[in-house]
Image 1 (cartoon, rainbow, N blue to C red):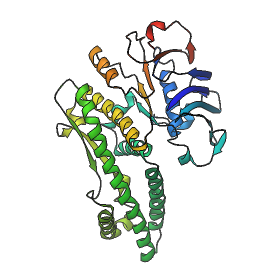
Image 2: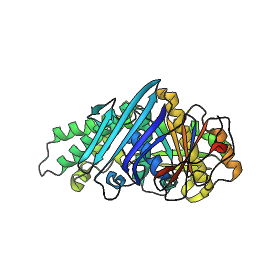
Image 3: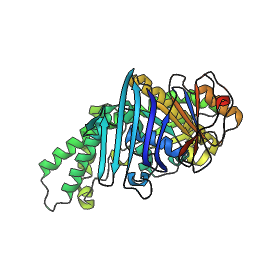
Image 4: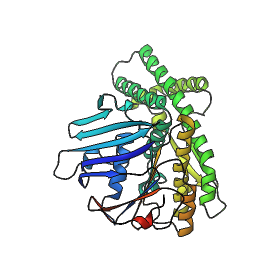
Length: 370
Protein backbone atom coordinates (compact mmCIF):
# COMPACT_ATOMS: atom_id res chain seq x y z
CA UNK A 1 0.00 0.00 0.00
CA UNK A 2 1.35 3.40 -1.00
CA UNK A 3 0.10 6.90 -0.20
CA UNK A 4 0.98 8.90 -3.30
CA UNK A 5 -0.58 12.26 -2.46
CA UNK A 6 -2.50 14.02 0.27
CA UNK A 7 -4.39 17.31 0.09
CA UNK A 8 -5.27 19.18 3.29
CA UNK A 9 -7.76 22.04 3.54
CA UNK A 10 -8.20 23.86 6.87
CA UNK A 11 -6.55 20.95 8.70
CA UNK A 12 -4.69 22.20 11.78
CA UNK A 13 -2.21 24.78 10.41
CA UNK A 14 -2.63 23.73 6.75
CA UNK A 15 -4.74 26.23 4.82
CA UNK A 16 -4.71 24.51 1.42
CA UNK A 17 -1.66 22.33 0.87
CA UNK A 18 -0.84 19.24 -1.20
CA UNK A 19 2.05 16.81 -0.73
CA UNK A 20 3.45 14.07 -2.94
CA UNK A 21 5.32 11.13 -1.44
CA UNK A 22 7.72 8.40 -2.52
CA UNK A 23 7.13 4.69 -1.95
CA UNK A 24 10.21 4.38 0.26
CA UNK A 25 11.21 6.61 3.16
CA UNK A 26 9.75 10.10 3.44
CA UNK A 27 11.58 12.48 5.77
CA UNK A 28 9.32 15.27 7.06
CA UNK A 29 11.76 17.94 8.22
CA UNK A 30 11.13 21.19 10.03
CA UNK A 31 11.60 23.13 13.22
CA UNK A 32 9.22 22.62 16.13
CA UNK A 33 5.59 23.80 15.73
CA UNK A 34 5.73 24.00 11.92
CA UNK A 35 3.22 21.20 11.22
CA UNK A 36 5.26 18.00 10.92
CA UNK A 37 3.16 16.07 13.41
CA UNK A 38 -0.02 17.54 11.92
CA UNK A 39 0.90 16.08 8.53
CA UNK A 40 1.53 12.64 10.01
CA UNK A 41 -1.67 12.94 12.02
CA UNK A 42 -3.68 13.58 8.83
CA UNK A 43 -2.30 10.35 7.33
CA UNK A 44 -3.25 8.47 10.50
CA UNK A 45 -6.72 10.04 10.33
CA UNK A 46 -7.22 8.43 6.91
CA UNK A 47 -6.86 5.04 8.57
CA UNK A 48 -8.93 5.45 11.74
CA UNK A 49 -11.05 8.61 11.14
CA UNK A 50 -9.62 9.76 14.46
CA UNK A 51 -6.56 11.65 15.62
CA UNK A 52 -3.85 9.76 17.48
CA UNK A 53 -3.92 12.51 20.09
CA UNK A 54 -6.41 12.22 22.90
CA UNK A 55 -8.57 15.12 21.64
CA UNK A 56 -11.88 15.61 19.84
CA UNK A 57 -12.03 15.83 16.03
CA UNK A 58 -13.11 19.44 16.22
CA UNK A 59 -9.62 20.31 17.45
CA UNK A 60 -8.26 19.44 14.00
CA UNK A 61 -10.14 22.33 12.35
CA UNK A 62 -7.99 25.36 11.57
CA UNK A 63 -8.74 28.25 13.87
CA UNK A 64 -11.42 30.52 12.40
CA UNK A 65 -12.82 27.80 10.10
CA UNK A 66 -15.82 25.50 10.54
CA UNK A 67 -14.62 22.36 8.72
CA UNK A 68 -11.61 20.50 7.35
CA UNK A 69 -11.02 18.22 4.37
CA UNK A 70 -8.50 15.47 3.74
CA UNK A 71 -8.13 13.96 0.27
CA UNK A 72 -5.72 11.09 -0.39
CA UNK A 73 -4.56 9.14 -3.44
CA UNK A 74 -3.78 5.54 -2.51
CA UNK A 75 -2.35 2.59 -4.41
CA UNK A 76 -3.61 -0.62 -2.81
CA UNK A 77 -2.85 -3.98 -4.39
CA UNK A 78 -1.93 -2.24 -7.66
CA UNK A 79 -5.26 -0.40 -7.77
CA UNK A 80 -5.49 3.39 -7.53
CA UNK A 81 -8.00 4.62 -4.98
CA UNK A 82 -9.16 8.07 -3.97
CA UNK A 83 -10.46 8.71 -0.49
CA UNK A 84 -11.91 11.82 1.08
CA UNK A 85 -12.89 12.91 4.57
CA UNK A 86 -14.92 16.05 5.21
CA UNK A 87 -15.45 16.94 8.84
CA UNK A 88 -17.78 19.66 10.06
CA UNK A 89 -19.03 20.40 13.56
CA UNK A 90 -22.29 18.71 12.59
CA UNK A 91 -20.82 15.46 11.30
CA UNK A 92 -18.30 13.49 9.29
CA UNK A 93 -18.60 12.51 5.61
CA UNK A 94 -16.47 9.70 4.21
CA UNK A 95 -15.86 8.79 0.56
CA UNK A 96 -14.08 5.97 -1.29
CA UNK A 97 -13.89 5.91 -5.08
CA UNK A 98 -16.02 9.10 -5.00
CA UNK A 99 -18.81 7.10 -3.33
CA UNK A 100 -20.16 8.03 0.13
CA UNK A 101 -19.50 5.51 2.90
CA UNK A 102 -22.32 5.34 5.42
CA UNK A 103 -20.73 3.06 8.03
CA UNK A 104 -17.47 4.18 9.62
CA UNK A 105 -16.50 0.52 10.07
CA UNK A 106 -16.51 0.12 6.26
CA UNK A 107 -13.98 2.95 5.99
CA UNK A 108 -11.71 2.29 8.96
CA UNK A 109 -8.75 0.12 8.06
CA UNK A 110 -9.07 0.52 4.30
CA UNK A 111 -5.74 2.26 4.72
CA UNK A 112 -3.71 0.57 7.45
CA UNK A 113 -1.43 2.98 9.29
CA UNK A 114 0.82 2.25 12.28
CA UNK A 115 2.10 5.30 14.17
CA UNK A 116 4.77 5.87 16.80
CA UNK A 117 4.63 9.22 18.58
CA UNK A 118 6.09 10.61 21.83
CA UNK A 119 2.56 10.44 23.28
CA UNK A 120 2.83 6.64 23.17
CA UNK A 121 5.07 6.81 26.23
CA UNK A 122 1.83 7.40 28.16
CA UNK A 123 0.96 3.77 27.47
CA UNK A 124 3.02 2.79 30.51
CA UNK A 125 1.52 5.18 33.06
CA UNK A 126 -1.95 6.07 31.77
CA UNK A 127 -5.28 4.64 32.87
CA UNK A 128 -6.32 1.19 31.58
CA UNK A 129 -8.72 2.75 29.04
CA UNK A 130 -5.72 4.11 27.11
CA UNK A 131 -4.18 0.64 26.85
CA UNK A 132 -7.56 -0.84 25.89
CA UNK A 133 -7.82 1.80 23.17
CA UNK A 134 -4.35 0.84 21.89
CA UNK A 135 -5.29 -2.85 21.90
CA UNK A 136 -8.63 -2.28 20.18
CA UNK A 137 -7.26 0.02 17.48
CA UNK A 138 -4.29 -2.17 16.58
CA UNK A 139 -6.25 -5.44 16.74
CA UNK A 140 -8.97 -3.94 14.54
CA UNK A 141 -6.34 -3.44 11.84
CA UNK A 142 -5.75 -7.17 11.83
CA UNK A 143 -9.39 -8.25 12.08
CA UNK A 144 -12.57 -6.65 10.77
CA UNK A 145 -14.60 -9.20 12.73
CA UNK A 146 -12.99 -7.98 15.95
CA UNK A 147 -14.20 -4.43 15.39
CA UNK A 148 -17.72 -5.66 14.56
CA UNK A 149 -17.82 -7.91 17.65
CA UNK A 150 -16.48 -5.15 19.89
CA UNK A 151 -19.10 -2.66 18.70
CA UNK A 152 -21.83 -5.25 19.21
CA UNK A 153 -20.62 -5.97 22.75
CA UNK A 154 -20.72 -2.31 23.74
CA UNK A 155 -24.20 -2.03 22.27
CA UNK A 156 -25.43 -4.97 24.39
CA UNK A 157 -23.52 -3.73 27.45
CA UNK A 158 -25.24 -0.36 27.13
CA UNK A 159 -28.59 -2.14 26.90
CA UNK A 160 -27.81 -4.24 30.00
CA UNK A 161 -26.72 -1.22 32.03
CA UNK A 162 -29.86 0.67 31.03
CA UNK A 163 -32.04 -2.29 31.99
CA UNK A 164 -30.35 -2.59 35.41
CA UNK A 165 -31.62 0.91 36.22
CA UNK A 166 -35.24 -0.30 36.07
CA UNK A 167 -37.08 -0.73 39.34
CA UNK A 168 -38.59 -4.09 38.35
CA UNK A 169 -36.41 -6.60 36.49
CA UNK A 170 -37.44 -9.64 34.49
CA UNK A 171 -34.95 -12.42 35.30
CA UNK A 172 -35.48 -14.19 31.98
CA UNK A 173 -34.74 -11.05 29.96
CA UNK A 174 -31.69 -10.29 32.11
CA UNK A 175 -30.46 -13.83 31.46
CA UNK A 176 -30.75 -13.21 27.72
CA UNK A 177 -28.62 -10.07 28.04
CA UNK A 178 -26.13 -11.97 30.18
CA UNK A 179 -25.80 -14.68 27.56
CA UNK A 180 -25.30 -12.15 24.75
CA UNK A 181 -22.59 -10.34 26.70
CA UNK A 182 -20.87 -13.58 27.71
CA UNK A 183 -20.86 -14.89 24.13
CA UNK A 184 -19.33 -11.71 22.73
CA UNK A 185 -16.86 -11.29 25.59
CA UNK A 186 -15.53 -14.85 25.28
CA UNK A 187 -14.76 -14.22 21.60
CA UNK A 188 -13.10 -10.86 22.32
CA UNK A 189 -10.99 -12.22 25.19
CA UNK A 190 -9.78 -15.04 22.97
CA UNK A 191 -8.81 -12.57 20.22
CA UNK A 192 -7.17 -10.09 22.62
CA UNK A 193 -5.16 -12.81 24.34
CA UNK A 194 -4.00 -14.28 21.02
CA UNK A 195 -3.13 -10.84 19.65
CA UNK A 196 -0.99 -9.86 22.66
CA UNK A 197 0.73 -13.27 22.65
CA UNK A 198 1.56 -13.04 18.94
CA UNK A 199 2.58 -9.39 19.24
CA UNK A 200 5.08 -10.13 22.01
CA UNK A 201 6.51 -13.08 20.11
CA UNK A 202 6.99 -11.17 16.88
CA UNK A 203 8.26 -7.96 18.57
CA UNK A 204 10.83 -9.58 20.86
CA UNK A 205 13.57 -10.01 18.19
CA UNK A 206 13.27 -6.33 17.24
CA UNK A 207 13.60 -5.34 20.90
CA UNK A 208 16.73 -7.47 21.26
CA UNK A 209 18.35 -5.85 18.21
CA UNK A 210 17.44 -2.30 19.27
CA UNK A 211 18.30 -2.74 22.94
CA UNK A 212 21.84 -2.13 24.16
CA UNK A 213 21.42 -4.57 27.06
CA UNK A 214 20.41 -8.19 27.59
CA UNK A 215 16.90 -7.49 28.86
CA UNK A 216 13.67 -8.90 27.49
CA UNK A 217 10.12 -7.62 27.67
CA UNK A 218 6.75 -9.33 27.94
CA UNK A 219 3.05 -8.47 27.86
CA UNK A 220 0.66 -9.64 30.58
CA UNK A 221 -3.03 -9.56 29.67
CA UNK A 222 -5.35 -8.75 32.59
CA UNK A 223 -8.99 -9.73 32.25
CA UNK A 224 -11.71 -11.03 34.58
CA UNK A 225 -11.58 -14.70 33.55
CA UNK A 226 -8.73 -17.04 32.75
CA UNK A 227 -8.20 -17.13 28.95
CA UNK A 228 -9.34 -20.51 27.67
CA UNK A 229 -11.53 -21.85 24.89
CA UNK A 230 -14.42 -19.65 23.84
CA UNK A 231 -16.99 -22.12 25.20
CA UNK A 232 -15.28 -22.52 28.58
CA UNK A 233 -14.93 -18.77 29.00
CA UNK A 234 -18.58 -18.20 28.10
CA UNK A 235 -19.66 -20.63 30.82
CA UNK A 236 -17.37 -18.98 33.37
CA UNK A 237 -18.61 -15.50 32.48
CA UNK A 238 -22.23 -16.59 32.86
CA UNK A 239 -21.38 -17.89 36.34
CA UNK A 240 -19.73 -14.55 37.22
CA UNK A 241 -22.81 -12.63 36.07
CA UNK A 242 -25.10 -14.81 38.20
CA UNK A 243 -22.82 -14.54 41.25
CA UNK A 244 -22.62 -10.75 40.92
CA UNK A 245 -26.20 -9.97 39.97
CA UNK A 246 -27.11 -8.44 43.35
CA UNK A 247 -24.14 -6.10 43.22
CA UNK A 248 -24.85 -5.14 39.57
CA UNK A 249 -28.45 -4.32 40.53
CA UNK A 250 -27.25 -2.26 43.49
CA UNK A 251 -24.70 -0.38 41.32
CA UNK A 252 -27.15 -0.25 38.37
CA UNK A 253 -24.29 -1.11 36.03
CA UNK A 254 -22.12 -4.06 34.99
CA UNK A 255 -19.18 -4.29 37.38
CA UNK A 256 -17.16 -7.08 35.74
CA UNK A 257 -16.39 -7.42 32.06
CA UNK A 258 -13.93 -6.79 29.28
CA UNK A 259 -14.77 -3.09 29.39
CA UNK A 260 -12.31 -3.03 32.30
CA UNK A 261 -9.56 -5.13 30.67
CA UNK A 262 -5.94 -4.04 30.84
CA UNK A 263 -2.45 -5.25 29.99
CA UNK A 264 0.93 -4.62 31.56
CA UNK A 265 4.23 -4.21 29.76
CA UNK A 266 6.97 -5.98 31.69
CA UNK A 267 10.76 -5.93 31.58
CA UNK A 268 12.67 -8.82 33.12
CA UNK A 269 9.43 -9.90 34.78
CA UNK A 270 8.81 -6.52 36.44
CA UNK A 271 6.40 -3.72 35.60
CA UNK A 272 8.14 -1.62 32.97
CA UNK A 273 6.45 1.54 34.21
CA UNK A 274 8.37 1.29 37.47
CA UNK A 275 11.57 -0.53 36.51
CA UNK A 276 12.36 0.36 32.87
CA UNK A 277 14.40 3.40 31.87
CA UNK A 278 13.00 5.92 29.41
CA UNK A 279 15.26 4.46 26.74
CA UNK A 280 14.02 0.93 27.43
CA UNK A 281 10.39 2.07 27.31
CA UNK A 282 10.99 3.80 23.99
CA UNK A 283 12.65 0.66 22.63
CA UNK A 284 9.70 -1.49 23.76
CA UNK A 285 7.26 0.82 21.97
CA UNK A 286 9.28 0.93 18.75
CA UNK A 287 9.54 -2.86 18.79
CA UNK A 288 5.77 -3.16 19.28
CA UNK A 289 5.07 -0.85 16.34
CA UNK A 290 7.33 -2.81 14.01
CA UNK A 291 5.77 -6.00 15.37
CA UNK A 292 2.28 -4.76 14.52
CA UNK A 293 3.43 -4.03 10.97
CA UNK A 294 4.63 -7.62 10.67
CA UNK A 295 1.41 -9.00 12.17
CA UNK A 296 -0.73 -7.10 9.69
CA UNK A 297 1.40 -8.37 6.81
CA UNK A 298 1.11 -11.94 8.08
CA UNK A 299 -2.61 -11.95 8.93
CA UNK A 300 -4.26 -9.90 6.20
CA UNK A 301 -1.46 -9.88 3.62
CA UNK A 302 -1.41 -6.09 3.42
CA UNK A 303 1.51 -3.69 3.66
CA UNK A 304 0.70 -0.95 6.18
CA UNK A 305 2.16 2.55 6.24
CA UNK A 306 4.50 3.29 9.15
CA UNK A 307 4.63 6.75 10.74
CA UNK A 308 7.49 7.61 13.11
CA UNK A 309 7.00 10.99 14.75
CA UNK A 310 10.08 12.56 16.35
CA UNK A 311 11.63 9.11 16.64
CA UNK A 312 15.27 10.28 16.44
CA UNK A 313 15.18 12.90 19.18
CA UNK A 314 16.38 10.62 21.99
CA UNK A 315 18.39 8.09 19.97
CA UNK A 316 22.16 8.23 19.54
CA UNK A 317 23.67 7.71 16.10
CA UNK A 318 24.16 3.96 16.60
CA UNK A 319 20.54 3.39 17.61
CA UNK A 320 19.34 5.57 14.75
CA UNK A 321 21.31 3.40 12.37
CA UNK A 322 20.09 0.19 14.04
CA UNK A 323 16.49 1.39 13.76
CA UNK A 324 16.83 2.32 10.10
CA UNK A 325 18.33 -1.10 9.34
CA UNK A 326 15.44 -2.82 11.14
CA UNK A 327 12.65 -0.97 9.33
CA UNK A 328 10.81 -3.23 6.86
CA UNK A 329 12.04 -2.59 3.33
CA UNK A 330 8.75 -3.36 1.59
CA UNK A 331 6.59 -0.67 3.23
CA UNK A 332 6.21 3.09 2.95
CA UNK A 333 7.63 4.98 5.94
CA UNK A 334 7.25 8.57 7.15
CA UNK A 335 9.77 9.97 9.65
CA UNK A 336 9.43 13.43 11.13
CA UNK A 337 12.60 15.10 12.34
CA UNK A 338 13.93 18.56 13.18
CA UNK A 339 17.24 17.95 11.39
CA UNK A 340 18.15 17.28 7.79
CA UNK A 341 19.46 13.74 7.43
CA UNK A 342 22.12 13.31 4.80
CA UNK A 343 23.17 9.75 5.57
CA UNK A 344 22.19 7.52 2.67
CA UNK A 345 20.50 4.13 2.74
CA UNK A 346 19.77 1.56 0.08
CA UNK A 347 16.23 2.86 -0.25
CA UNK A 348 14.38 5.55 -2.10
CA UNK A 349 14.31 8.63 0.15
CA UNK A 350 12.15 11.73 -0.28
CA UNK A 351 12.67 14.82 1.88
CA UNK A 352 9.88 17.32 2.51
CA UNK A 353 10.66 20.51 4.42
CA UNK A 354 7.76 22.03 6.37
CA UNK A 355 7.66 25.69 7.35
CA UNK A 356 4.54 27.34 8.82
CA UNK A 357 2.18 24.77 7.32
CA UNK A 358 3.70 24.94 3.83
CA UNK A 359 6.18 22.85 1.91
CA UNK A 360 9.41 24.79 1.54
CA UNK A 361 11.07 24.13 -1.79
CA UNK A 362 14.78 23.57 -1.37
CA UNK A 363 17.45 21.45 -2.98
CA UNK A 364 17.49 18.31 -0.87
CA UNK A 365 19.36 16.11 -3.33
CA UNK A 366 22.05 15.35 -0.73
CA UNK A 367 19.36 13.80 1.39
CA UNK A 368 18.08 11.45 -1.31
CA UNK A 369 19.28 8.17 -2.55
CA UNK A 370 17.34 6.29 -5.18
